[in-house]
Amino acid sequence: MATLVGQQLKRRFALPYACYKLVFKREAFIRESGWLESIRACRPCGRDGQPIPWMNYNVVEFFDERLTDQLSVFEFGSGYSTSFFASRCRDVLAVEHDMTWQQQVQQMLPANASVMHCDSTPDGSYCRAASQQRASFHVVIVDGRDRVNCVRHSLRAMAADGVLVLDDSDRERYSDAFPLMRQHGFRHLHFSGIKPGKSCRNQTTIFYRDKNCLGL
Image (cartoon, rainbow, N blue to C red; front, top):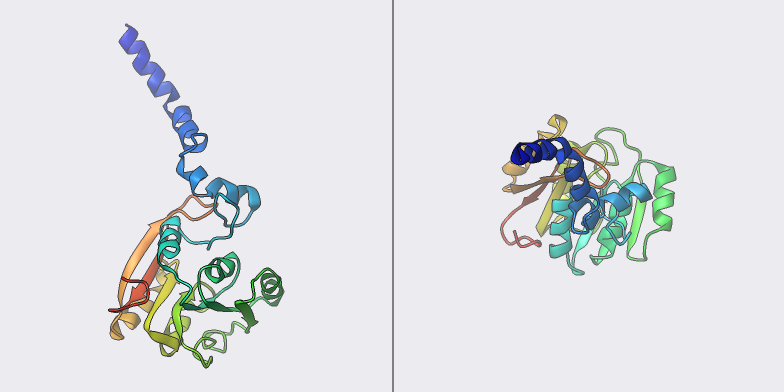
C-alpha cells in the first residue's frame, strides 16, 4: 500500500518537482547560463549581467573559449553581441540597417568597436559592407538582413584563416549558403540549443577551412 501511494505521489508531483529543479537549484542551467537574468533584463546576458550574443549557449561558450585579442571581426547586425566580441577580440566593425538602433549600439561600445549604417536593400550595399572594407577579417558574423548575399559577398573579405558564422542556419531561406560555402572549400560545424530568453532550439553554423583561426 505504501509503495502504491508513493508511486502515485511521484506521478502527481513529478512536474512541479522538475520545475523546481530547473528553476531554483543553484546549478540549474537556466540560472547558471544567465537565461533567467536575460528574462529579467530583457536583453541577452550572462548570469553576471554582461552582454552575450543572442545565439544558442553552446556556440556562445565555444566563442568564449576560442576567441582571442588577435582577431578582427565583422558583424552583420549589431547589438549586445558587438560588445561581447569587442571585449574578446582586437577590433569589431558591424553594419546595421536600423539607424536608430545603430546610434544606440554605438553609444554602448568600447573604443575598439564601431557600427556603420547601410540600407538593407537586397543585394545592395548592406551585404557588400564587409567586402568594401580595406581590411580582411578573421571572423565574419552573419546575423542580420539578406544573409545569403552577405555570405556570398563576404568571402572576399575573409582572411586566409578566417571563419564565417551563420546564425539561425536551420532556416530554409538560408539553405543556399551551404552549397555556396562548399564550393569554396569550407566545411561546417553546427551548434544548437536554446538562446537567452527563448525556449525553442536554435542553430548556428560555423564554416571553416584547415588552419583556421578558431582551431577547428
